[in-house]
Image (cartoon, rainbow, N blue to C red; front, side, top):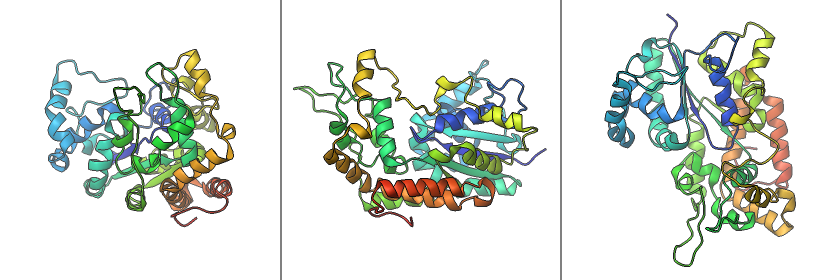
Length: 360
């Protein structure tokens, strides 16, 4: 029996995580007709807390998430017909020691659980796997903060009660610290990202996570706990190669298999990075309103405001991510040229200066 391998994938919204998820699913034999299975199981993000609580109860027994959900999870998976999707696993019917190669995604409702409870215990999880001759690794993605602001705005364009989209310059005040908060306190902005309401009787709910040097330092420290921090622009094939190495996946049998596994065909609707802005629940009118806002439609003053919002602390966090992307597993993923190109573009867009940045 092969030693166990576990990949903890922290999916920061709008960084290309859905593309990464699709690749992992195809390795687990899901939506991958004719491709050899290389991954023994894939735990979807909304089931991640149950997997961690039931498989590693001794580590997570005192966490708020497991105290709240462990009974519910036991009931859900202990039923005569547990709802386990294709490629998934029942955490009550396996033992991690003999489960083979597994990947677990943390996203949406399980982001907070990962950042506040799993990441601080990552060293302990690694020791458990090392004792069995296996590996436990963590992987995430980072994206240029300004691109991230626009991508979030287009995905969840904030609306007034009447359905009118709030213009991007007005929305800008709400996204300060968006990237940083993903690695410090993800729920501070996720809880309110649906709609920003404005009325005479109710205060507008905004995503004011706030950002300062101390939060940036904490986010950078958390980034350093990951085994690999990839860049959205260098996702294919660098991050895929990193995941292969961390999971100890067997090599692809043919080049065709590798290309098909990374292909966009067949599941474009499931979140691949697209050239056109997307929205989860927009009408034709709403779409026409939010799509007019791009970097090039902003005047010079508003562009300066966007740069200032990013410089508050998100620039420092992304700079750390670029540094890690250039050094972690460098001999495996061969992403150096891509990362250096992204770093050059990033610095050029900022006028070759960044505030509180890491070593760029």
